[in-house]
Image 1 (cartoon, helix red, strand yellow):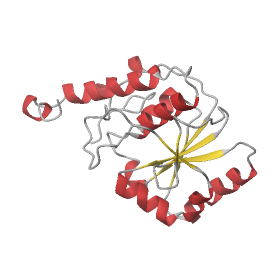
Image 2: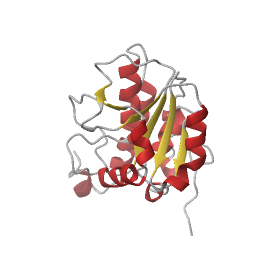
Image 3: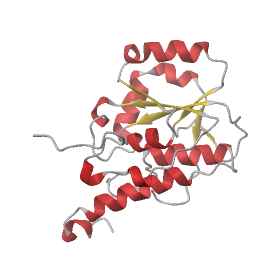
Image 4: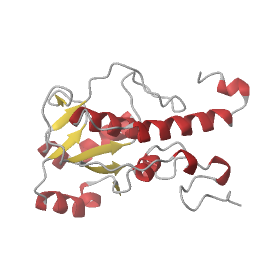
Length: 197
């Protein structure tokens, strides 16, 4: 029998985060290309991102066919489109001027899955890529990452929005993530919790 979930945030009722959600408006359009394995993941930060920024779009898929409708919409859009992904050809969002009204494409999955999404969708390489200059480790401590520059999708979105517009207050995003991390840690047995501190 499945656990009852909150009808608003869709987290289990005993892990409801509604009290920690503060919505915000942004000028940039966020589109998340999500690996199918992330959809039901309990620690997925994209669900939080959608709660804070309601206009966030999530497109689940792996292959170019899965994203065919999205590709048509992007081709018809007059807004500049950027892929958020560090590569040899990416430019620093912190060091370049990016308009606020842009479309940001973020890949949601582990590094391995995000790389696979990129390889299966060469059309993504048609867009200029942006990366973040990271000077601190991820606050998403409840999920283990193989790389020191790993960020949750929510963190990447928050940092990218801040890099584009220094005046943008991203506290609703970071506060929501902190609340989820603390809630998850509090629910762990003490010996398990100690591994994440």
